Length: 455
Image 1 (cartoon, rainbow, N blue to C red):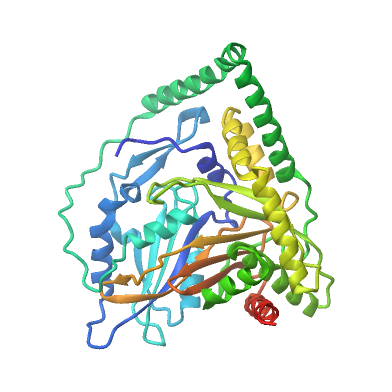
Image 2 (cartoon, helix red, strand yellow):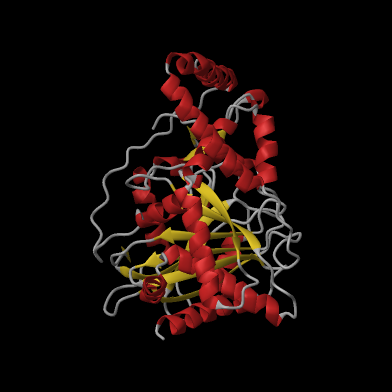
């Protein structure tokens, strides 16, 4: 694989990471050992994962900085790669404890930015597996897709191909410096040619003016101030917890069909309803929360690494007590955002930001991650729709981990696995020790919507 430079969006996830806000995405999965089959040992599972690494070469690459910060870092082969540093065993007996063990630790930047933690036998007899990769390396969609690279559609995996990988030597400081300057010069040159292109084509000028207006509108939405909410926007520690539940995906589809909404709309409305219940039970008055909703911009397979996502922002109606009005409100807002081209405009705005000096981009990134910009993240991440197996053990559930920035105590994610909707609430454990009640409240909100759909 050729060395690749991180995009401005990839690099932004490095910029906003801190000792208390770890920017890894991931999932917590459980596998059932079929009757009559031998339970794979940890060593066997690690060997299996290592044999699949040729499918994802970046998993054996680390980041290398450009001197003086003149451009974004590049990916280089890790000459000291050791699978034992990336696939580790845990004696956890519950999937929740395995998540807490794995997700509360920041990924070291001197090696490839991923890790898989495996518990051979949980108390219920299943195998637990938690995977994490830095957000600069993959987005949520790609993280799920890369997870399936470890799995097979058949209980009997094919024999691995021989792996003749040998790390390439990383370019030295001088080459990284020169390469960074050249790439930066080319970016600026393309910008300098733009006025001449506009002059030659009045039609292009009109199109560009419209695009600038859309970008400005999306940027205004993103930067519209949010009021930090005391329950969900407070100083956090590094300790993490994943509150989870799952239910039939058909329930969300039935609700959506009854009210002319999408499954994503139902997820957002149920999140608003769960927050309403949770905050009210604490004796507080819930209000609207400005919510960042990631939008997938990938075309085709998600196996390409890096980030191909954009964002839209809506005010989640957590203060609304009626479940149907909450869903209608969310549906209208999301439809408006999509019809106005906000996801594409936000992507173009991110592309324009890359022309700023790297230091200035980092300032923008930290501002964008502030609770004064948004309160909450809610993400819908499609998962595998067919049965998948790890060395003959069937994947039963996969709960997503959506990263949280500083002063953000919770994110809400949903991944579909076959006919199940798996919900993961990734929380700063010390700030929300009762996060499992929030998961129960969201589950109850779905049940409430389902009851109204069937009336």
